[in-house]
Amino acid sequence: MAKRRVAIGLVGSTLDAGKGGKRWQRWRPTVALASQPALPLDRLELVHQPATRELAARLADDVRAVAPETDVRLHELPLADPWDFEEVYGALHDFARRYPFAPSHEDYLVHITTGTHVAQICLFLLTEARYFPARLIQTSSVRDAGDTTGTHRVIDLDLSRYDRLARRFAAEKLEDRSFLKQGIDTRNAAFNSLIERIEKVAIASRDPILLTGPTGAGKSQLARRIYELKRRRGQVEGDLVEVNCATLRGDQAMSALFGHERGSFTGAAAARKGLLRTAHHGVLFLDEIGELGLDEQAMLLRAIEHKRFLPVGADREVESDFTLFAGTNRDLRARARQGLFRDDLLARIDLWTFELPGLAERPEDVEPNLDHELERASERLTRRISMNREARRRFLAFATGGAAWPGNFRELNAAVIRMGTLADGGRVDAAGVEEEIARLSRAWSGSSASSSTIASGHIERVLGPAAAELDRFDRTQLADVLAVCASCHSLSEAGRVLFAESRKRKSSTNDADRLRKYLARFELTFDLVKSQVG
Image 1 (cartoon, rainbow, N blue to C red):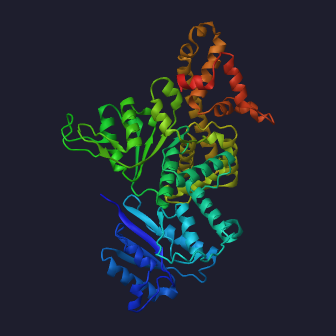
Image 2 (image 1 turned 90 degrees about the horizontal axis):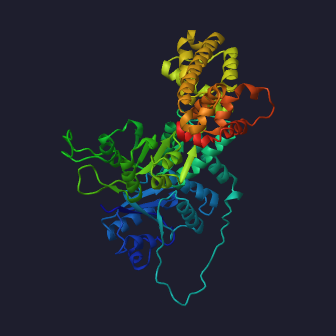
Image 3 (image 1 turned 120 degrees about the vertical axis):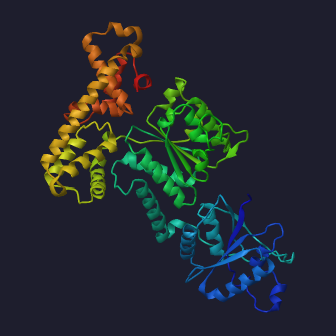
């Protein structure tokens, strides 16, 4: 189905003016725009000032007379001075942000012939910045060829000179970044820089976004926030469709993703649309994409590149114009080397990759996230949950003092829920914190021991024949190191977990280098260990 054509323009107080019958004998830009035989308009959005309200109404009637098929809508925009660049830009910027653009269904044109030079320039800049997702269009009359002089007016476009505009954009960026962080005032410089880059990409690109990081680092929550930001900016209209690829198994995986025709296999009593088509004009978030089978990966690659794919049992391709987000706690490059992930798909989704750090890598963000989790716990438990001063001090000392947090923010949330549920009157005290610290320590110790046992069984696979030459002491120690490496997402994170106690006694540490040198004794690297036992 062809898109509807929509034009957005300003009422020209001079060029569009005229009351009597003679007005039909002169060229008027807005009427001319609607009269172009090769460019019929489905809708015309006319922006005008209060002072030109009568002219705008008359102009709308004239457009309807020459183009009855065009729906004309008037928008009054109060301006004290149409030559004030800062004021005009701000007013048109607000109009663009409020307008319900639907770019998948409508094709937009911005008319820059009418209005003051300032207004025309502002429309140009806003269109260039994609606040108006449109193309520019200019109408002109057949003028006297002998008039080559004309007139001009110089407009200063240095936006940095306009303090209110600078504050407007700075506030908008801060608002977007705060939204991506769920309003949490994070302090980790690396994480804040990461969010800044994600915000820029989210509003400027429709290419796939890959979120990596350990389990519980917040990939799913961030994907939902990025989707909401893109939707607010008019980049997507459809729904966010989420699926954990680890839950897709066997023949059902292909059907769930790409749909199927009725009777295409045993049990297919009715046709199924599939997740990709459900995400049409929206976002498809494939969490744990590393778990997809190779056949599904091949189909997904074609769907990403061509927006077309073949449902199970169908003999005709279908279309879906979706934006892809993907998440994984796997090393996709290692899986590609093992033949478990397609190189060409990885190359396609690796354009914008953002690695989310675990909670242990952001100790300065534990406190603001603790406050956030206390608020969430209050909503969940329907009563105010708080901590007294000593309880807060003790918990933060534990949480930032080398705690492993293998479950990351998901585990922090669970800890706060437990403490809040057991606290008398919703007030967590020091005793409640100590009880939770003991519970976490026991859980982590058991997890480490279990992981060490598993890793011990993989030493032969990692070292090969050299494993037989290990002393029992070295085997036990290496097994524990392998267990930690398997549970951590990066060399730095594993180093912090392994050397948590000794690093407290040093003013300067390089845990990653210590771990790197230890592994080198066995001719191992962190990436090699992760690819084998991660």
